[in-house]
Image 1: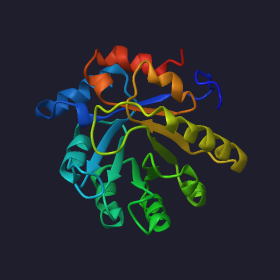
Image 2: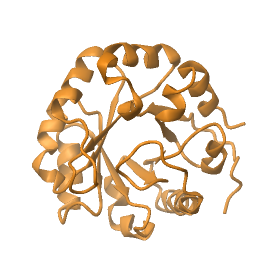
Image 3: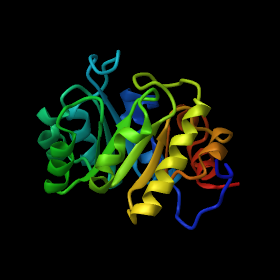
Image 4: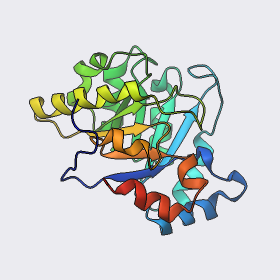
Length: 223
């Protein structure tokens, strides 16, 4: 494994997850994140089938698009995402990520996202071998590695998932690709050192339960 604290030439992006936000004051929460230096806004969409929880959907994505210019980083944890790709793109998704386990039409989903002008993302559950993604790496703009089981916020970081970042970084280099590596799950000022190869960090609890500006600046730093 490469050194966890490895410094990179790329700028690390921070995508706070609104799953941890105060939904009664969502617009002010987004404004707070913008002022604090967030790069993207991460939106978790769950259907209660693919994962054992239900969260926000299209109306919230549409509402977010009206109140922020930050790219919406939408993570679909839903069965058969092909049914909703066009709607989520129209709602304002910049990055739209599906799960390799959620559909038999992975390739067509990724192509549709790009055809509609979006950035295509692909994710996988912790128990899914990272090699499963290999046929699709040339079709994605982003790969999201989950370091918790998808479905709930506030879980503990799974260190054994870091090896997936190593594999993705090697494949990206050997194939001459430019997709971003994103990590979501238990990210804070301590676990960030284990994911030095990640280009984008998703953080919910750590950002919203602390001073957002200080938390985001801490995550951006490789120190």
